[in-house]
Length: 308
Image (cartoon, rainbow, N blue to C red; front, top):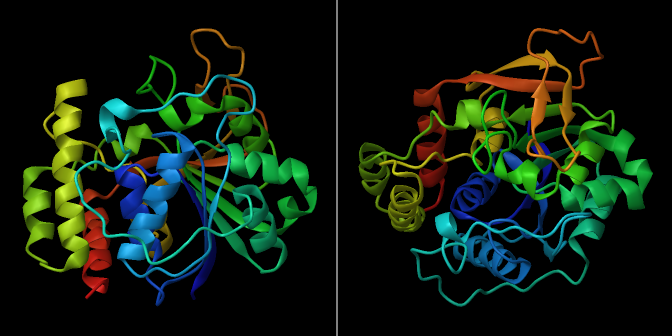
């Protein structure tokens, strides 16, 4: 069954591949793309989303969303994603233009006008949180939220926090306490899907427009990972959200209670995952515990081959 989704993102190299997967019309009815600041400023993440969609002929509404978090100061990730937020590929001038609505309004309209909408979030949760506050009726209409963020263990921007959650923990607090069914795919699994030279070579052999974009982007992505973290291959976090919609055997989830630390101390942005049910609180999240790496790359390859 083809799923209705809205993709909320902050491109970002890994977001770009999530957009690519979501553009497969035979598997997903992509209702629209809302963009937030995160990996770069909103002007840059927005043009990146437009460039990727236009290059791949993904003709859906793309709306510019929130420039700043709800409470804290804005943080970007230029060290990994570069000055443009998507360094490594020269996109042609986009054939599409931005939707005139704000990204928050695009989310609201898409959910109110369609049934069984899945929200896929691969960046900070600001747009979705504000949509829930602006139009509370959407909460009961969202089928589920599938997000990349958090971790059951260590962070990647502090000892405690993963980048997407840390960028706007207050927004994450709103979303995680909304009562909507949530699947959280965190660093504890996405750190296993590394874009190795072997993976890049495999995808390069597909030899189409999508594989060319993937190959060039991933080479720069890995170069920045080496400079920043001293690792040879970067983890391709965000496409895991789409991959688990296509193949329910890609990721294993466990139900538990998850709280977001919004105390603005050294653990701000931590996803406190009660894996062993110590607190006996109601479960509000399905948390990714493991990922089938081979199945994941099969989904990526199939997505690249979709584009002629």
